Image (cartoon, rainbow, N blue to C red):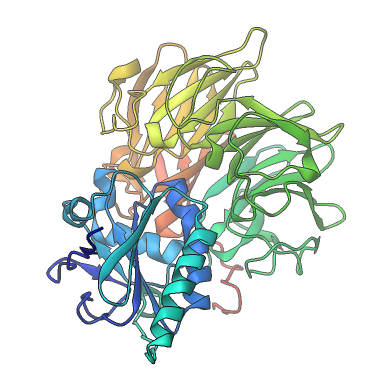
Length: 503
């Protein structure tokens, strides 16, 4: 069987996380992994811990190169990719494959795909999908042994990373979700990049910080507890319990605000590989990137982004399981058992339906809570590549990787149209959708209505006449006065990043 020489990497394309372009010629004698990814894709994000593991284990002989081949138009922008590198703490060089040239040269068909290049410069393996760490580990180990048998020695390589050039030093780091409660005057903020939860008043007076600021999975008192990139939250006021989707730990946490204690109530800490609908005891059931939460009576509904499903946890008996979705990544309506989702990342409810920001399909879905219950589309094309930026009605609406949704009552549903940098409103009955805030250009500008600017807003929550926005890439919490349509940036003078003091 003929060996295939690895196509050379373009030197005139943008490179990130390195001070110089890399060529396979210069890397000859080292093992190279090419990771074809796009930063919206949950499956691509699941590969990153595996790559980090392999990079550490074989740091003397392995070079990992991310080849970013964008799905969405927004993801083609170099600065947006740089922010994703910072957000996910990627520590290997990234080549921006803006026109899919490298993708085509390596005959890639899906995200994620990993190509393995041996020290002689030949492609010796290519695998698509996640969960391939053991297979890659075995192949790399074999290639290393073969090289060492030939008397080859390896030399470590160092790169200047984006986090060294542009460290995030702000009080918040990529906040993903926000939850406002008017009656208790509390604002809960998932400070995702700092691996903690911040609790303040609705005006920004900090009251508690939950989590040490170091990524990990540890229950206990507020200061010692650990999270890993937490996202959505749900608040039960009578019991003073805050529920947290601890996304990269693949667990659900309960925060007792009275006892100031954090405990894990669902998930095992390991990512589930089973996407078929199933159920079990919450504490013994592995989860797959839970991204957002809504509590209705004794049930905690979960947007399970990693398995493209909606789950339900019964808080009275500790049982949980799939509520809707087959596990396939698509946008098919129908019964709970036959419907499909595409990386659901935001949840809200009006008490009759769950509203879902189905991010990879750029569509807002509605999931029935009655009997019989069905899944329908509110607005958006309902197609994995049917994205854009168009107001309108129903299927004519175009969103771009929407991550957040909030119920505003009176047939008003607010949408964080993340990659369009806008806040939109849709009537969940008629499907009429309209832009209210943001001009579509990434930035941070306060002002009225469409004069304001956001940068990948991801989370929304309504309290009184204010809409709170987790403005993720601006590392900020914004507040929208729905009476005056004025957008302002909340100030948190008492808050600082972990281990960094601000005046």
